[in-house]
Length: 222
Ligand code: TMP
Image (cartoon, rainbow, N blue to C red; front, side, top):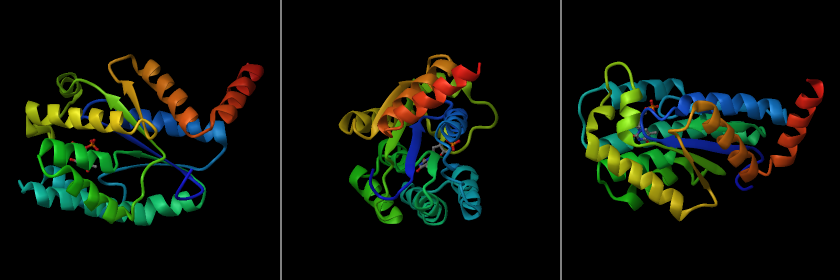
């Protein structure tokens, strides 16, 4: 484990894959299984300033791709400096709904900005902080879009080709760095997806013995 005493977990994937539900369920479980403080958070919008940036970037006027990339990076810089790093320094497990790979997938893949530039911008914004493990909830974007309700935001309106490129970028990044990424098929039933997420995250964070103990003591109590 690098960077700090805590653990940093990010969830990534297209719109409508169920990230927020899985972030919440994994966070609860990790807290119970490890006894550690767990901070669940999200991008954009994990801070007060971030809530404003989220409104502007997702629901505001149209803007060019570089402006969009800078707003997401600004949200991320503030989120990392004021929430993520302090929590990791306390030894917490931080589980975030989206992080820098969303910028690479959406602003580089989707909006077709340079991938290295977009990644470099986020690395600069965060002082180079990368997650210990990144869970990609992978789903056909057409299926994801059908799960969404309400008025679509600027990104959800970006079109089928945009969302196809976004998915391809996530999958390519996951394949290129299997030490950081785990890919879970998000078309399976919710409980199966969450079970797979738990197994994969526990293994990556070297928490398997702690987690097995927690499962055994639950079974003994039953
Ligand atoms: P969500 O929080 O409901 O997933 O919505 C966030 C939207 O913003 C989603 O469409 C993905 C998009 N996004 C980017 O385009 N770039 C980013 O860096 C992040 C964090 C999100």
